[in-house]
Image 1 (tube, rainbow, N blue to C red):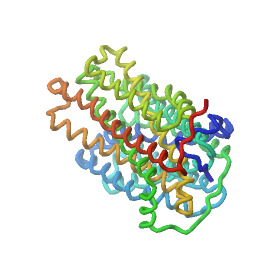
Image 2 (spheres, one colour):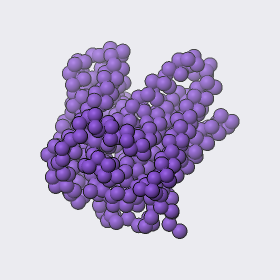
Image 3 (tube, rainbow, N blue to C red):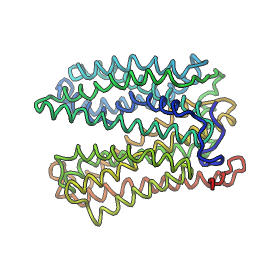
Image 4 (cartoon, rainbow, N blue to C red):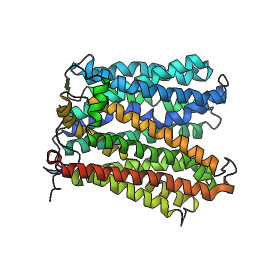
Length: 448
């Protein structure tokens, strides 16, 4: 079982009880899903639209329907991982079960996805994202079963976040490298170059899975959906953490939804927007180990507050002095990317809360809770995209003619994520307040 320690507890110092090889192996298992997250959502829609089989309007509907499907299936997958085929090594079995269909469906999508009719493509994507969720939920909940202290969870999920950033950098670099070497390469060629990284990440993950200590999942009677919901709402810290996840994802989604427009209309660097986006993930990879150290030393909620304040200050500062030229824009993107590490804190905080939740419910709900956390992330990004495009329409912004509403776009780019992070900070302060008032959740003082 995971630790009963709490996210803000740092008693015992930053000493981890996990062996470095276990931390490294666990981090490496994140590769297959990390590389198929954001980059896939960037490349897949235009690739499908370019095929011409599905009208452009239906491409948007297709991805909306798959998001709705995620909302239904993620909690079911979490419950399944907790309750079905349990025993020693159950996390490992679920990940191996998910990996084969994930690989086969990825192959189908990047080779014939642009030629499939709507119904066939929808079913292919439903099974693809279900396999994706099964692998990721099993992997995340396995981490919660490995940790014993807050230092453990900070290190384990911090290194997972760092490896995920490396995978993202490679994922964004592969199509760019293919286009550089073969200037006439098609969009399908670029997406195949990107997807080919799965041939690297999957064997690494398979080897790493075998190096992680197995943990037992004990099958216990379910609570029923009403009791599940009631138990969750009766644990305020848990509900607040879900809110933190939604707001952080909304802020991140706002930045990614508006970044290309910002690079074009405000910075005048439309041709270099891919370079700037790439630089932001390099910044995240460089910052991840630093934030991990700080989270282990000073606690996770305080450091997440610091992170939000730093990035919000950077965004607001651009309203007075925007980056000028490519060099300054790259530096800005690197600094902005240092804030793309929120999951490091949120995943590890949930891992610390899971034992406390198990005490309250009478059984562990680790996979179910991580599935809900993933769902909040998806809803946050989806809401950010919807709100961002609605606001762009309200301020009269037109792609390709962005100079006419550049100031309004700039305000939206800077203030929308800042407002979301401000609300997130309030929730984190409420979490701290709950801990301070409840003796059972007392916050230990940071080590001297």
